[in-house]
Image 1: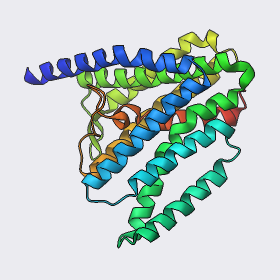
Image 2: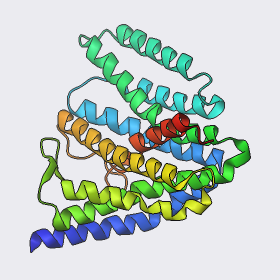
Image 3: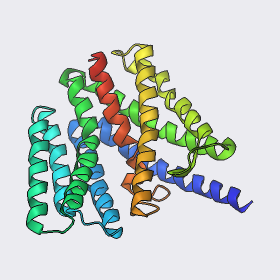
Length: 277
């Protein structure tokens, strides 16, 4: 009984947070490229800080301020030029991090440099995927681009909600107990079912056939759940339970946007692979 009450209470807090949080995200997406950039910078900046903060708590020594600044710079580069200068920007980030770690003179030079570089690319590169999707669609189809981003956000939220509810109600067999004991096979499959529901609004995405849209949502749903597991593995390796809290019922930015960091890049690659726009 106490366990059931805890689940109901947790779901109530998550639902209340979503009622406040989801409309804000939708407004930022609907506002166009500049408001989308604001959302991306919040996720990338705060997410980088959380990741490096957890690493420091675990006794690691990342170049936190540098890594966060470079992650934000990658997002700004993507916003300004799409993929045009992305490779040079990544190469510059690698060189700066290697040089900075050397100048700091740490005894754990390799670990410090690679942790900083990994965090920079994890947040700065993967977190900028919505901007790449907006650029890939093109300026003449911005309305459809916004509908596509909203559909992907809806896919992630519905995947998360369906997996949480169905997993707690009927889940018995664990998915990957060594990484995330709370995840179940039933939750994973139910999450995919929930993630496909945005296909009902396919009329707003005329560039997609129904099969293409279902394929996109399937990939985003599976990728989102993979992103959740990756963040769980990171936290387990660092010996922390949650990222520094920001959102009631959801923990930090990383706890809320871990799925986004995989779903959106995979969606972008899917769009490029099938030449949809």
